[in-house]
Image (tube, rainbow, N blue to C red; front, side, top):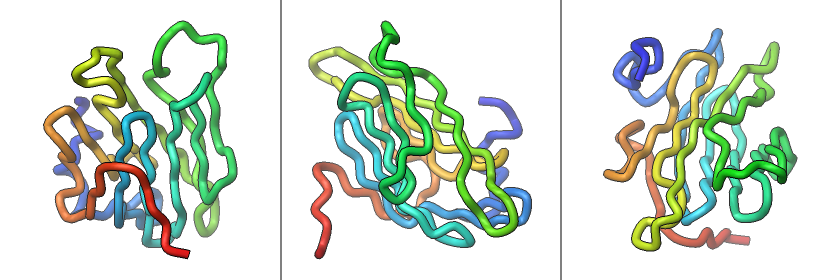
Length: 144
């Protein structure tokens, strides 16, 4: 991990991305999908979906990035996109790794970077950053 992306560099559970405060309030983890509820200056739901051919990143249900369906990997290691923020869009990136091993099939590593700050980081040992976000494993059940 590069020094500029070390989670410990971030003040508390928030990041300051060019003047934009972003924090992961809640994370939902499924085998091939992650849903992060972002709060702060950016109030949005970010969904990463690798369940079908090609991966997609949604912000509030709108596709912000997608990978090619012609890739010969189970996931692409990096997806870059922008998040609308007050004043200007902020660059964001998802770094992901997955396994097709029957004992650990699905996403094994997942990191969301906004600007130059890591705002969410998980590995096979669980969520490493932020430590105060609520993490829910299993299918998402929305209250209507």
